[in-house]
Image (cartoon, rainbow, N blue to C red; front, side, top):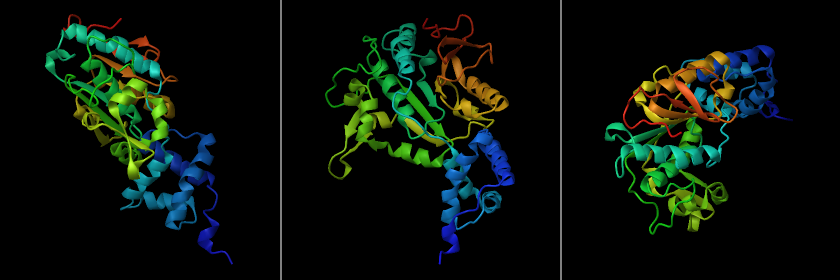
Length: 319
């Protein structure tokens, strides 16, 4: 005979799907249309089996009951899509390396920090997944600001004895994500060596380390790069991202497409409020603001600049 637990959960009913639609929308902003019903079944069924539950209704009661916070995090980890790679949408990194950083350096003067008042340049990877994006940002910043005379494209790092230079002005990258699972992976900063093909050769030589022995077949980032990136769990629906301060660069790519129009507008408003004057917001290729806020101007496909106050020093446009 087959044990009851081996039969698996009963099919997701209309009412149960509606419960999860509402819960996931409220917690994450992700809008799940009717076509996402198989996705919810596929991604949550393993949690039901792990907990020995027979119905999705039981699971909903488990995650919403007092003391269910831990399993609620697991549920969101299962639902969130975390597709990413190093230097995804490479043309945006080339824009940063070829135009934005040189313009900031020219405005600040040789050897000076690239932003006003001598404060560190700050970037935010607002949906960092397993860490490829924030480390791609950190490589681009460290490389570009360490070599103000080069003005080359992203990935054209020079040969450096002993690894990456630490001569760049102050740079900090905040990396956040809703998923605790992917944040844990990102903080480990270890990837299969096959992922090296995504990284431009110059950056690969300068900033990455190949594993040996028990770590053969893996790669990680150099310590000087790791020190630039700070990881935090954060929900983009949080009404108070201001606690992180203002950023010169915000990357929030391929996230807004999962929100409905009202949630998208709310999140965009928070992102713009977190930009320093003259700062840049990078979105995914399929995303755009379409006149959402007149204070920002499109400077490249899916790249927007917050207009600085007239006459503000050190905040000139790169165009």
